[in-house]
Image (cartoon, rainbow, N blue to C red; front, side, top):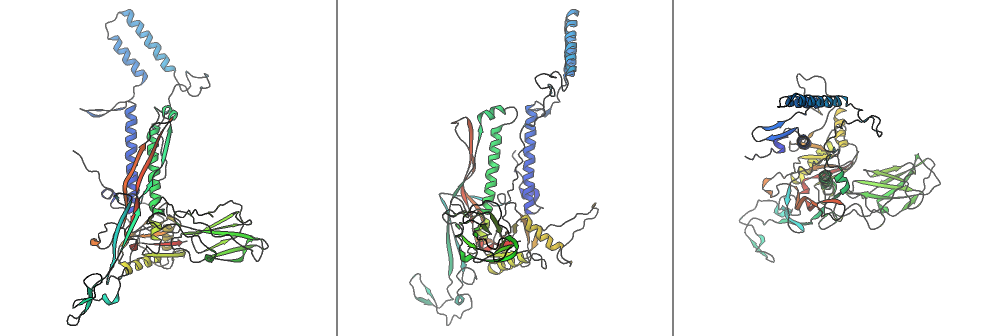
Amino acid sequence: MAFEAPRIDEMFGGLPAEQRVDRFEAYKSALSQCHAKALSAASRGEVSFSREQGIVKTAGVRPEAAIEELRSEMTTKAMSAEQINDVQSALDRLADIQKDWTLTNPLTGNGGYSNYGLVPYDLDPALALLIPRSFILRNSISRIGGIGQAKEYRRILGVSGSNYGSAQNTATTSTFFTSASANNGPFGGTGSSLNLQRPPKISYTADRHVVGYVEQGVSDEVNMQAQFASQGYTDLRQLSHTALLWSHMIGEERNLLTGVGSGTGYIGALAQPTSANVSVAGATGGSLAAATTYYYTFTFSSSAGESRAAAIANTTPGTSNGTLNFTFSSVPSNAIAINVYLGTVSGTWTQKVTTTTAAASITAVGSGSYTVSTSADNGSANAAGYDGMVATFTNSSLSGYTNALNTTLSTTEPGKEFQDAFASLYQSVIADPEAIITTGAVRRELAKTIQTQTGSTGYRLNLEAGADGVTIGSVVSAIANEYTGRMVDVIAHPYMPAGVALIWSKTLPFPDSGVSETTQVANVQDLMVLDWPVVQLSYDSSSYQYGTMIHRAPAWSGAITGIQ
């Protein structure tokens, strides 16, 4: 009889969302190790399966025990006394040889192997896969099927009175009317001028989205000589397939978070910055020379990479021991960092400073070697990619809330920045976010803002009776949404860009919206592994996936950038 495997929520439902995923991954890893150990024991003959008995374990036989068993068996046979004496003498000689085997005998002094003897090493049957991996988004975003070359979805964004979308005609937001004098319209379709004695007619706002499917994949090869040489130790082809799957899924996890596409229906690359985006002022406190001309350029960074660099400019510090202070304006909402390059020769960059705020200072010319994109190539988007969560939620034309904080989190009101986001999202679309995804550093900063409070209202302590010792430290696992009362999970993602926090509404607060989940992965072909025909002395394989990521309701989510 078949049994359904337990779901992750059934096994770890009492834990925060990010801990559930980690526990589930540990659970799967433990199962994999258990299977590997069982297969290894079976290959050594230590474990077998009997239909009548089940799993049968067999202890290894000691050489001296085998000799005694053979001696006992031989003496019970119908043999003459002379034959028995000959066999006993042979067994005695065999026992003497066995007793002389040690860690260094019988190979002592032979061929340089004096320290090895004939004692085998205890080698693990497979190599340890010490690969850091995290699949917070991949394990929580649903995957649906797709057809064709692109995904199309249409949305009704607003109706009269909804206070959302462009359908906000104040003349039709009120439902009050007087039937005796009502004269509203037009009714009767396009071109009609017919007004009728009815309540006012509502209007709609709608849009249409088409996003192209994109391909993802990686490849690996196993040298044929290596495959054969490893037999009896490990299966390199199996190891290659496992590593291939991990590599693909790690890459997809990063794309779900930080991808930016420039194909059909996607946000596209950041525009090249110009001199109008920056002002430069000199100051003291550095090591820049007063009479030296310094050349500089800068780029904007999206979650995917750097934009094309601005035109090269130059400046000269007014004093010795100088510093150059850069102040930026008109920074795109989905630019999460600014990179400033400096050098004493035009086009040769020896210093690079990256800032997540609208200001940067350079105090020394540096001794590095950096390159920037000055051609039409633009690393802030990928023509073969799709838009991930950071790119979508930080784009002010799509997201429901964006805030370039450009400073540290409030210490007088811990969590204020997130409460402001909750308030804005609630007031605009009645959003009720379920999760905040940010960096480990921002999550720690949240905890520190509570720890430094002098009052007792910023946090809650839970004391457990009978516990031994004291637990030091605190962690922010959730923030209470003061507008809706929901506890919003705070999740640290290892691939999140510095200074970014996403406020994510996974579902909409009204069940009849037709949108079961705001974020989904639509795949024509989900992850698969292909083994290529052997056309050279190697075994080659590739992973492949064809699909996209869709954001059905980004206006119910938001982002805070520039958190210090």
